[in-house]
Amino acid sequence: MTERKNTDIVKYIEESIEIVEKMGIKVADIRSRYVKLVLPMEPNLNHIGTIYAGSLFALGEIVGGAIFLASFDHTKFYPVVKELTIRYKRPGTSDMTVEAALTDKEVKEIQKTAEEYGKADWCMSLEIKNESGEVCCLVNGIWQMRKSGA
Image (tube, rainbow, N blue to C red):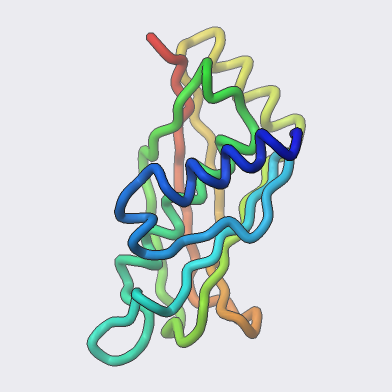
């Protein structure tokens, strides 16, 4: 991807959904078929001083849209989340990160299916980690890419 396209994607992820902007989710790294997002502690603290569970869930969900933008043509397709589960393993006591990646083969298969049938699902199992690299949450999801106008 060109640097200009990455800049546009980062701006879209960080600013197009008001709640994501309010949570302060930022793109730490983005390149073709890969994205890393960061959720800061502030303003996401709960009543006991750890990161609010809903913010962690949102981080696990929004990464599907981010990896879509890093992998597919958003002028021809759009993403939706179909299913998402999260297992909280330990409290979030620092900024949190999540990384997602798709292989070239996965991207080609998903795109081919979406072009043929108007939509295609993809699954990801992800880890939300604290600053020390400890896994705090396990996320399993199914996202769907749909053909625009389909």
